[in-house]
Length: 503
Image (tube, rainbow, N blue to C red):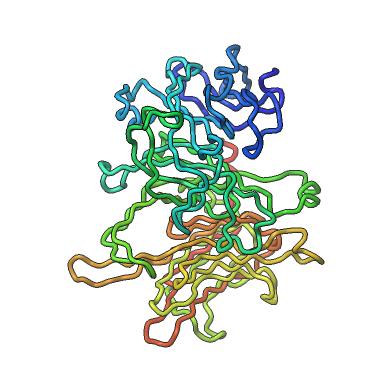
């Protein structure tokens, strides 16, 4: 078809009321498309495809494209990646029936104004009927509130919205947008040595409230303010898309683990590029009685948090060859003969899960785990938290070949992270939050989650073998020492055959 002759790009599942599976997608009629060049009108359009046999066969809608292009009168930097769902809080704000109103957004931006998503109402009885409302937010170009928030860029891709409730008080809710950001400015602190390899994009989230818009060229009946935000993932994950899973009553997000750390020659030789991340649950994390952070003061904290989808992790631990090992509470920083470690007897593959927790002392300078990738310990992957700089780092091993730095990017992954200080309301005793690290490796892919607030996905092309893990903690002089509270390792994880056959 002419309207999608040059591409069938990212889309989403449409919640239809007929007996079909319906998918909305970006139909591309002409190229090139990039936010840095003028956007040819209607080069991107919105189309539908339907299946009435549970996805075995698909038919494009005879009405395609159901939207021929971007809103009239706007000079956009992009207009693609549909997302559609119920949004009760938006319905309430606009005075619409929340059960009979869907909302759709298209990602992009307005040239010289900033990135945004274009908001539509969608008829649930006929999802080909999209009615344009307005840009959903106006954050400006390359807005970056702090080292924690990230750069919102110049153009957005794969934007999606969701409302999250406090897990202990459903009356407390927050509105969120998840966005892939293009055109970000360099961040030397967080990308040391890796800038030349990766595109200037990020995977961010932002939170705000719904308010009446200014009703001008770039604002309409409603506008979502930008109050706070952060990185959904600080590594190589991009184009994250979410959905509400009615079975587990959770918002689930998937991302694309990209292949930018591999040179073109090796990527072409490999024959494929990129893969999907583990599915993750999104939730509103609340920390009560917070009186400070490990460096900067703070008083109350609610933030977007993520963790791997629990039913998946439970299934991976049930694989036919899984070996489970455990370490008990131990002091760190002792002599070599007293080191706390999983040996090569505990870990023999590059398919494993690690779950470990630390009690970090006030005098700690660094704490974490070193994963040995060679028998003589000369090459290792290191996961390390530095409390004084409020930084979490993944140091990656180099490829064992000549001129490896020209073949792969093995620069460290660096993310801001802090531990909060809470005060017991009864005793007045203050306590530093436990450092909780979860990590999953699947061959070259490593996904790390720290206190559910910091996520880093990365590629380990130089870590084809694993020969053990050693836990470390460095303290200055004093009676207070950093401790490993416990660690569990599942090696050779995988989905049981019975589950794969039943699916």
